[in-house]
Picture 1 (cartoon, rainbow, N blue to C red):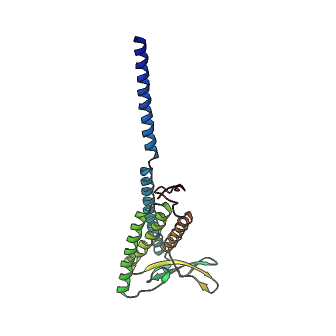
Picture 2 (picture 1 turned 90 degrees about the vertical axis):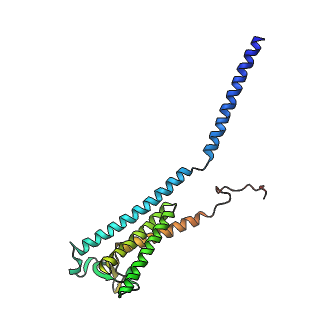
Length: 218
């Protein structure tokens, strides 16, 4: 009788341990199958901060370049400075929006553009903060940084300082500055982000984008 009880006790202990480890394996499997919410949140936060960094870097570079062009380089007293056969440095005060469009000579028009630029900058920064992908966040940061740089010019000088002129023969492009380059680059980046997202297509079904089985019932 005693050997029988010892065998039964050993079997009961092994069975209990097996059930314990099986339960732990199932629990860990459920944990691993959960979506990586922490990783997603980290990626979103990284995109936001990269976008904000892009805005600050673009703003700083534009303002530093303008300070150098107006100060040590003294572009205002040099007239037209040829750099290449198709690119010159010039000094133009732009009282309109980017590339000299819609000029505003009155104080009311100037302050309208300032308020419009500040509102646009705030909108792009808010949009950037909501973005979950790196390319849109960087692109919106470029646009926000360029827009704010031109707003600062309007507040300081009453107009935006433009320096870059591309030309070919009798054709001359609009004079622009670094802030305009950032804005155009941001718009191109947003277009690329939209195209890549559109080419990926909508999710095929379910919350996780998995295909529903063909024999699934409604």
